[in-house]
Image (cartoon, rainbow over all chains, first blue to last red; front, side, top):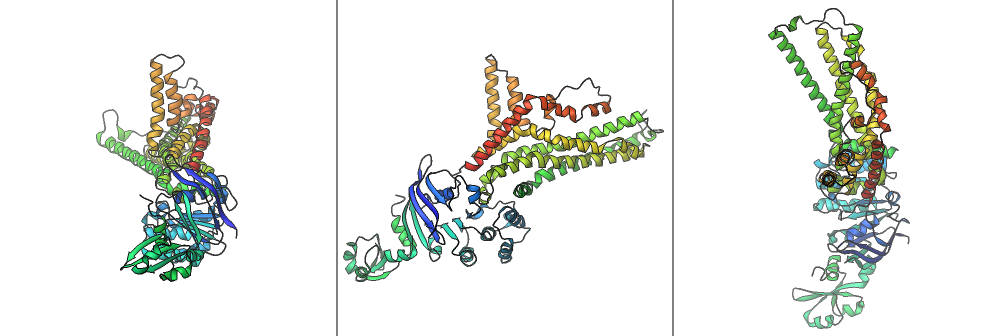
Length: 285
Length: 320
């Protein structure tokens, strides 16, 4: 496994707050990593540091480069979509393609034209005439035509309707992602990316509090539906979380042996959103 | 180099309205006003046969003397310069606001994140904006100004023909090509002279978190007021006039075409009655004598330093 991103003691201090608190993590190549955290947890700051858009303390290695020093070189290998509305409003669709084609050494024009042919976008349209969903189609077509090693998505589907959201991730999976590429994505719509992630990182108060791949996530965490008569026994096993549904309790366990849990009730894999809520308890308190 | 070309092209796409249409519209309005003036003159002239000034009979009899023709030609050259100058003034205003927004507008609407997702260095981004301001915009203005001027010359020559003066003789007496040539050769001087204003505006544009216009105007003016105030208190060595002219004026006003003329070597006794002599004296050599003035070079160095500052802020400004 080769690491695409290696952060060691990554720290970013704003005037009034600590956005990244000596955090360390590694992102391997060929993975789709979800970076999930509550508002203000430091997600965007971490992405900005990786993209060389901000200063920081500590060590950060992205594709063998320091994003502070080699940003121009790095951006040939790294793409990002910051959020939906960042394409300049005056730009025409055709001009956008021409511009990227002539300034990005790894851009494949034929690919981009093929992507655009599947949409309703026309060369002469300006971005300001497009709907949010169409802007994202354009941005995605541009980005997917770039043969980059790392793609960073910061809330890429915010404000889109469900058709565009589904289409967005489907295109990424079908037409873009392969073992040579790595995708790092942050979003609040966890349920929608749950099935495409290979790795999961939870960030809270500037620290990575969970860093796991999806396979070991299923082994480590378990959700058990327990009847009221066994609830007390379940509580003794130190559940992360407990909630009530139809007179039964659902417990979330971290690292408790499978046979032990199966005695209590029906065991299943927790959803990321339940795990997230349990992990982030008390964040805003 | 190819990247730089596309960066400048991008500036043109974004600011086509200011760089191209503003001078074109100015030219059209100017032509229309002149045309209306000529028509008005003809109509009034014919209707009112004012006393001695019998317009209908006002035909130049015979041909002009070579000297007269020479003067008429020089007069047309001067009009060409003047018209191109007017268009350049419009462009100067456009460029002033262009520079203020160049490194700020995309931060405000966050599209800077798109540009920064491409492998473009901040240095070439900022320099492409400098090039658009001091080369692209003035060249477009000069070309449009000269086209407008030539159109107007032809219009005047036509009117003159109606009154008996040979069209071609008059046009031949003018030197439109020389005017174009001179104007184009003045652009480098203009560029060097405008550097402090461009640098200052770009610096404010890259630095300000909001309202770059206010910062860009307020800081030099406030500094000027403070200096004047100390000057009033009679502290030695501080001349507020000097400060207003050489600091405030250069930071905010150097985009004005011909601003360097106060620093050129003085014209030696030219009367206003001899346009030909005036035109020939105000040649390139006269303009470029401004190169000898320290204000030009100190300003240019300061401008370059401020552009470097703008590049630094463009790289590191973190809007949180």
